[in-house]
Image (tube, rainbow, N blue to C red; front, side, top):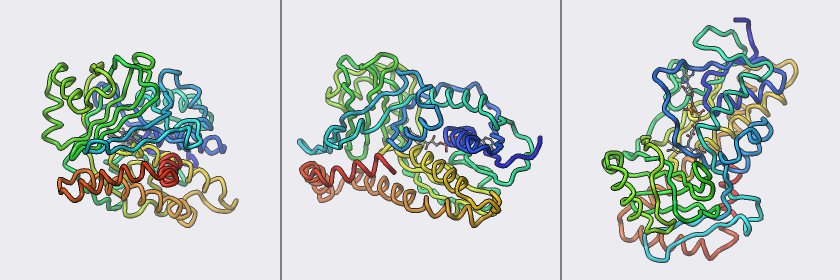
Length: 370
Ligand SMILES: Cc1cc2nc3c(=O)[nH]c(=O)nc-3n(C[C@H](O)[C@H](O)[C@H](O)COP(=O)(O)OP(=O)(O)OC[C@H]3O[C@@H](n4cnc5c(N)ncnc54)[C@H](O)[C@@H]3O)c2cc1C
């Protein structure tokens, strides 16, 4: 194929958004999509997206293209610890924002992005062909083979946990309330959603030790629903399974370098975090925004693959990536520990933060904007 300005390898949400963002600057982009190895199973996940990600999706004309029932606003969030009364509540109202987050259908987001890139001017969707480009942007996900070929190390800390995801139907309206339980060693999140039924659906993300994940995956629907009822105490009503279940092994990882001459890493190819704070894709879309800004502001004489240019991107992403990795890892260890002193500390901490509105506002704004 003809030479292009940028080759984006990996057409997941991060690579697709990057291709769209760069094409809007008039750059020619080849987006390399992997041929499906097996018939794809529908992704049952729902993503919690923050205000910054939604803004990017609006700019790329993706947000309005999502069907109304594939995006649902979160107005309140209720977090419970593992002692009676230890809880933390956030609300969009007290935060002074339209919504704390938006819950988006992962499969629908990928479908809308695939349609958008196929119509985008300056974007060619290609397979595994040789592409001449000034810049190779790698958005291949956490198992990026090109990153490995470039010799970029990405030390991985495996948590020995998996996240079990599914869609649920409740018998009580969710009212836009997200619920999360931090109960050593489980972290369970119910994300309000409108599919398959408006106001009654939830996306489930249940992070548990691997052996428990295997058990939960093997239970029949009735036994799984009973396990959910035990874990949530009926706080969201009676919950019924309405999709397949899928499990993802969890880890923390950060590439030692995110750029070099002529190449750059974005999304899960550059960093992986535990989904307990629902921030992995938000970080990846933050990468897209930052790289697009750096590219748009480059000096006219500077090549797109100039490492000095790409270092500007690397510098702008270093702190948010490190901070999110440390925050999710710290929370996980704090809430996974069985030590009585830590248990006491975390439960008191939740109640303490709950009584300090300025600190709560600070925590929420970090999650909304990072
Ligand atoms: C259970 C769970 C829940 C989550 N919930 C949230 C949430 O609520 N909010 C949030 O922000 N994040 C969440 N995340 C994180 C989020 O899923 C990831 O951060 C996000 O999918 C990363 O997107 P990506 O495009 O970088 O990588 P991927 O989604 O992994 O996409 C990479 C793409 O590259 C392709 N590819 C790989 N190699 C090649 C190649 N050589 N050539 C061409 N293509 C290639 C792959 O086929 C794939 O399509 C969650 C993760 C899990 C596991």
